[in-house]
Length: 214
Ligand SMILES: C[S@@+](CC[C@H](N)C(=O)[O-])C[C@H]1O[C@@H](n2cnc3c(N)ncnc32)[C@H](O)[C@@H]1O
Image 1: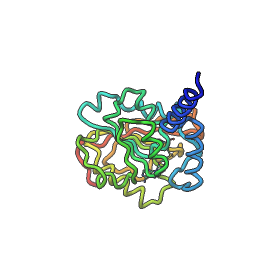
Image 2: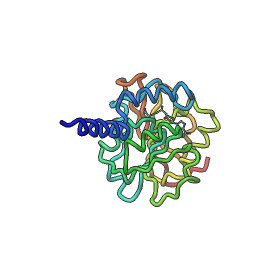
Image 3: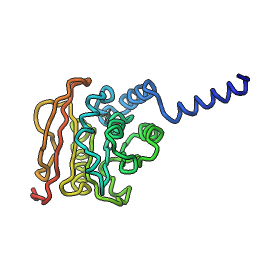
Image 4: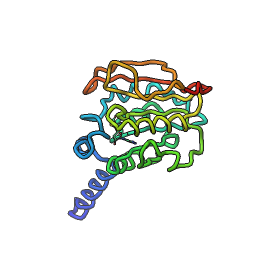
């Protein structure tokens, strides 16, 4: 191989690495964001494949025939990856991540999906949704976020999720009920995932077709 070929190969490799940050880069990025803003990150490391797969299992791709899916707090994208493995197509996926550095990483990893860098509480002011939101999958750390932010996010979820739509959330609090969930949601199931650091619980809710107005 000529030296010029070598160097262009090297360049190609470097730009590919920039396009799709590797696992170590993603791990370091998560740690840096955790040090910068522990309350927003609310986790010591990214979700394991076991946890991410359980989140994605709740969403059958046929659910999105005429609607879209919003993922909240995607971090470096383990749950996004699992949703794509599940067969969700990228053009049905809107990813919301507040950290600029993490949103940039998601844009590089998931070309074709819409990535919004904003708070989950402000989605409807940032984007005009062209199809009903059939499901919302959230990794947001509701227990560590300020209570007013968590409440504002759940109001936004109630505003944008279609009646009958699914809301999937994980928590490290293995006992007790999810705070901030309103009576407009009915719990469908709850499952413990031990193969995660720390162990977690995935809960699946359905938004009632008619509001109970509490
Ligand atoms: C527990 S981490 C989950 C990351 C990833 N989904 C995973 O499972 O490893 C929570 C993520 O939510 C993001 N986040 C926190 N507050 C947010 C908000 N108000 N709106 C959108 N994203 C937020 C954080 O930046 C962080 O990436």
